Length: 582
Image 1 (cartoon, one colour):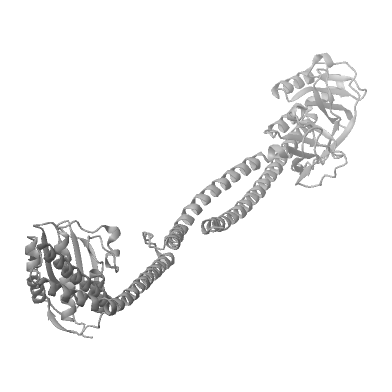
Image 2 (tube, helix red, strand yellow):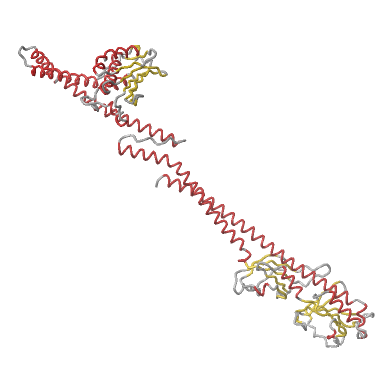
């Protein structure tokens, strides 16, 4: 597994697991809070239904008691001959609108004596079906079971006795309360799929909202379910076609002196409807979690890339070095520990490369030393004999012109071979510098003077650019060899009539010697190789001069570099410490 994948996995674990946990906890907390709010709302609605029904019935009971005690009710004794009682009942019904279906007074014989509807007068009163009774102070009002009146509407008969002046009963006042008033109270609490029920003391349904008749889920199964006596919230089982129900329950508390009949208001809502907001909230949290995942993933990829990229580049750098055995472009600098690791590793690779080059150079120098030793022992003696013989032949009388030319070739080639042997010996076994203070500008002038004839042969101009004297601790003879080699090489590579410049200057605690020309220059690919033994791009060159130069500079604890001059040719820069004395 790569470091990038490892980092991505770590970031995902660190970022997503807490996000998932926090999102889940937030959802659970929100769901519980919302569910509690729904339960409180249902219970509050049930309380409002119970209070509304209690107040409605209390007012009607008070009306019944108050009207039964009016003086006009005494007309029942004379059969309401002047219709005064019937007119009163009609006026009451008209003033209360649709709250009452009918009002009538019946005698002790069961005959209707007076009524809001004249058509009822003289008829036999409907058979009473006593259901409940309420006592308010010293008065009692009885309730018959809810039944349909002559118009087919549900009505709740309220009965209260009419007493004469002597206290004996004269009959009863019957008020048919329109049951739709109770249903309206239930309907007002029904919305968003809620159903309001009014339960009797035996838990039977005595009224229900019209919403319950249209509910697609059907009513929940109430039979056999123990309901609490006091207020509370509960979960009811599923109905015929729906899921479970959430419910708020409120027992009748009565009003004032009216204790109520123990009825219970039940406000129901299907769990699917009640918790629809929770379901929507779940999708919101899921969307939020997905957004967090995407943001975390994007952030993780960016951060992992930033962290892994320097290491990836360092890995590629290492692979290329191991494969090609040479330094490729160094990775861009990075910050922090990764940057320090990159710098340390690159420096290590550079040290290894330098060690490899030094080892290669040492092996070449060792070969050169062996060759030089062999050449010195085996070649110089025959060369001396050849050169002496050539000189003798040149002085022989009668030698032909062609012979003299051949003798010249022998002398020239023996000199060239001797120079090769000398260069090889110098590169193989350079001596240690003998330090002394040397003024560079004067040393450069001497070297230029020594090479003046060579430069004149090609019409090459040598310009000295030193502006001030510079003293440096060095081996004068070896440093002269360095300058002669560099200037001589420049003269050899420039075209006829070319230009070579040499100068020295002080840079801090170092002295710099610069040799520039307007020749063809040196390719960047060859700039490190030119200092290797036996490397030469010049026809007839041995490839040992710059190797000897480098050996001398390194022995002086200096450095040599090659670049491009302002004239377009090569630029060799030798830097030496100023005060090196040993």
